[in-house]
Amino acid sequence: MKKLPFIVFGLVLLLVVGSIQAQTSVTLTYMASQDWVHDAEMELGAQFEQETGIHIDYQIIPSDQYFTLLQTRLNTGEATDIFGGQSGVTDLIVNYNVEVNAVDLTDQAWVEQMDPLVAAQATVNGRVYGLTLWNTLGTTWVVNYNKTIFQENNLSVPTTYAEFRSVCETLLGVGIIPLFEPVSSGWHHVLWFPELGPRYEEVTPGLAEALNANQTTFADDPTMLTVLEQLNELYTMGCFGDNVLADTYDMTTQALASGDYAMSVFNLTGPQSIAADYPDVDPDNFGYFVMPLADNQNLNVNPAGPTKFIYSGSEHIAEAQQYFDFLTRPESLQYLIDHDPTMPTLPFEGLTYNLLPSQQAFLESFAAENRGTVYQTAVTYVNPQWMDIGQDLTAMFIGDMEPLDVLMSIDERRAQMAQAASDPAWGE
Image 1 (cartoon, rainbow, N blue to C red):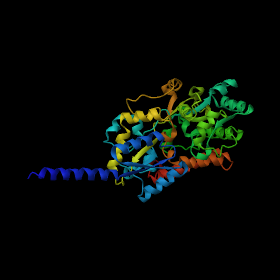
Image 2 (image 1 turned 90 degrees about the vertical axis):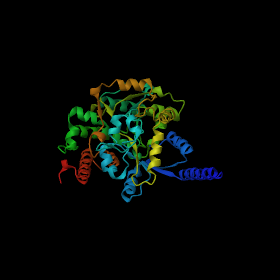
Image 3 (image 1 turned 45 degrees about the vertical axis):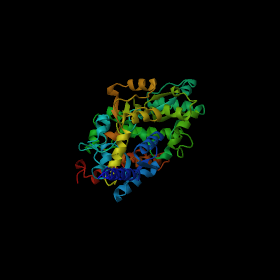
Image 4 (image 1 turned 90 degrees about the horizontal axis):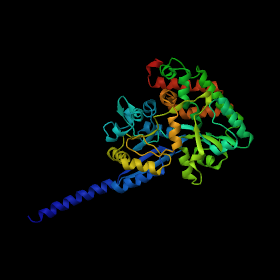
C-alpha cells in the first residue's frame, strides 16, 4: 500500500512527459505572401515555441505567385494550418470562402480588443474569421517626398495634377528621377487607381453603392478614366525612371534613402522603415501628400489589410488558436510596435503608438469630410483581381492596352466574379 503513491506519481509523470512530447511534436505551417510576415513576428514565433514547444513553419511565397498557390491549396484541401489573405468582406467570400475554409474565431477573447472597423473587414454574416495584425493606420498609402530635394529645387507640395506634373518636369530637368514605382512586384502600381476611391465618391456621390448594385460600370466613370490617363502620362514622361518595369518593392527604402528618387507611393510610416535600413537618414527629412491624380485632396482610408486565418481542415486548430492568443497579448503587440518599423500602430486597444509628430499632424490635417474608404474595400470584386489589374496597367504602360481598355477589363472580371458568387445584382 505504501507504494501506491509512487505508482500514482509515476503515472502522472508519464502523462506529463507524454503531454510535453506530444506538444513539442506539433509544427504549425503558416503560408503568407512576401512582406506580410516580418522579423519581429518571427521572433515572437520563437518565443512562442520556447513557451509552448509548438514550432511555427513560416512559408513565405513571392507576391506574384501567392494567390494562385493559395487558391490551389484551398481547392485541393491542402492548405497550411494558418494562411494569410487580404481582409475585406468580398475577398473573404470570393477568394477564400472562409465560411467553409476558415475557422470561426468570433468567441476568441482578442476579438473584443480589435478595432471594430478592422474586425468588420474580417467578418462574414456576423462571424469573425481572421486576425488582422497589421498597421492599418500607418500603412495608409501616400506620396512620401524628400524635403531636401524639394527645398533645393524650390518645389511646393502639389495639390492638383497640373502642379504634380510640373514638379515631375522640374525634377527630370535636373536629373532626379521623380518617382520610384516598382512595377515588377506586380501589385504596387495598382495603388494609384483604387486608393483614389474618396475622390471618385467626391465627384460622383454614391458611385460605390451604384457599382455594387450593378447600376454603373468602371468604364462609364470619367474620373476613373482621367486617373488612368494621367498615370499613363507619368509613365510616358519617364517619371518612374528607366528601370520601372524591373524595380521591385523591396528596393523602396534604398531608392528613397539614396536621393536618386524624389518621391514614392509608400506607407505613411515609410520613413521609419527607411531609417531602420539606413540609420544615417533622418526620417523627418520626408514629408507626405495624397496622390493628386484627378486633383485628389482626400485621405484614402483602408481598414482592411493582410490577415491571418486558421484553415478549417487543419489538424492543429487548437494550437493555431493558441498562437493567435499569444500574438494578441498586449506585450506581444507592443513588441511588434517597438521592434518592427513597419508596424508603428496596430488595430488594438491600449498600445503606445510610434508615429512621428509630422505623421500625426498629417493625419489630423484631414477633416472627416475629406476622408474616405478606398475602392478595393468599398467596391465588391475589386481587390480579388488586384494582380490582374496590375497586369493590365503594365500592358497600358507598354502600349498594349488603352486606359479605357483597362476599365473595361476590370468590369468584365467583376461581372464574372459576381455571377460565380450568384450575386443577385448581376442576375442569373
